Length: 124
View 1 (cartoon, rainbow, N blue to C red):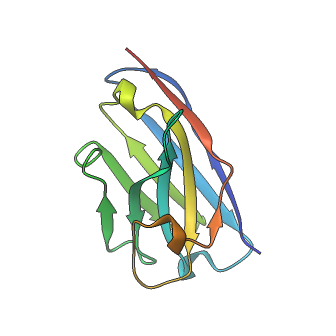
View 2 (spheres, helix red, strand yellow; view 1 turned 30 degrees about the vertical axis):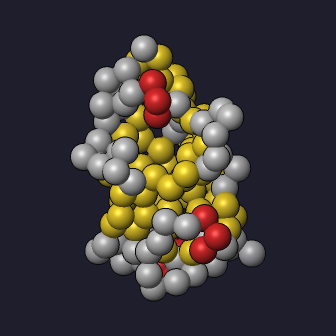
């Protein structure tokens, strides 16, 4: 079984930055592509970013491209989401997810394990 624990959420003013972390335990971290998703109140969960097992390939939603950066440290079993130039519309619960595959994808259904989420609130 794989466990994912997110941290780093909080309250930040518009234009500010936050870095989310997701520590993974239970299986070989480098066997999993990793993704970040978010869910705002009253909205469906949506794709934010994904990274391949080695970290050589990344994918971003258009809404965060140029502002967010996904990265991973396989030695620390951790994936990160650096979020800059935050906007009020980035307010959501952010989830990390693990996908036992060599590809990276945006569909939630492709991910095998999920964390509990961390709240990010951006004030205007």
